[in-house]
Length: 98
Image (cartoon, rainbow, N blue to C red; front, side, top):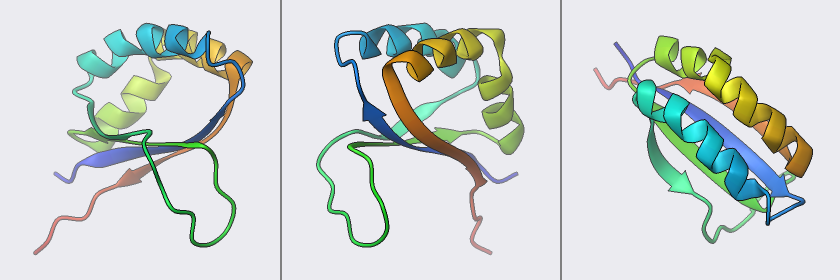
C-alpha cells in the first residue's frame, strides 16, 4: 500500500498564535502515524505562486492521511489555523517504484 503525503503551503499571519495550532494538531498527527519530512525552512521559489512556509507530512496510507484531516482533533486545530494563517493543503498518494 503506497504512503500518502499532506503538502501544505502556509502564510502565517499571527506567529504568536500559530504554535497553538501545532500543539492542538499533534495528537491527531501522532494517532495517524504522521512523520514530518519538511517543516518550514529555507526554500527557493521557481515557478508560480509561493507561500512563506512549506510542510510535507508522510502518512502510512491515503486512508490514514484523510482520517487525520477529518478527525475531531485536527478539525479543532484547523479552526485555529484558519484564524491565524492562510494555507493551501493537498493530500497526494505516493508512488511505489516497481
